[in-house]
Amino acid sequence: YDVEWLQSQNALRLSSNHRCVLMPFWKFTIVWELVAAVMLCYIAVMLPVQVAFDDDSSLWDWESPQVTFDFLMDLFFILDVFRNCVTAYHDAFGQLVANHRAILPHYLGGWFTIDFVASVSSSLRSARS
Image 1 (cartoon, rainbow, N blue to C red):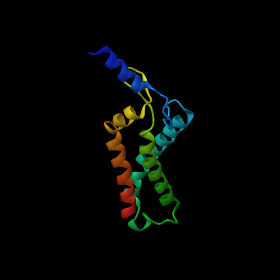
Image 2: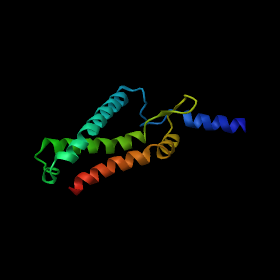
Image 3: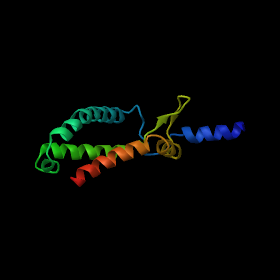
Image 4: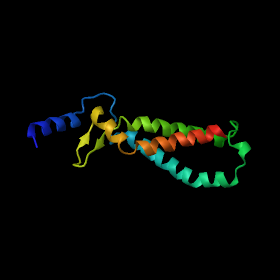
């Protein structure tokens, strides 16, 4: 390997002088992840119950607090996709990568497809009803 090229690539990946990069250890990011975990637990319990026992007429009744809450959760997870596009991550060597040019390809090559399909399909399912 060309040592100078590797060092320049490493410096590019690790430079953190870019604005609008969320750090994984910030309080906001930690609270966001905890809220997402609680919402996922809620969905894991409530989705089967709703599918089994709710009638189709109540699925899109905006007067229902349940429908409003479900919509807000869908919105939260759509925003989560965008948040993940600007959140720094730790690479395989444990170093924090805080460069947009490295964060976005890493996310697009990893969890993006799963996150996008899950959040958009949930919203489309709600809108279709």
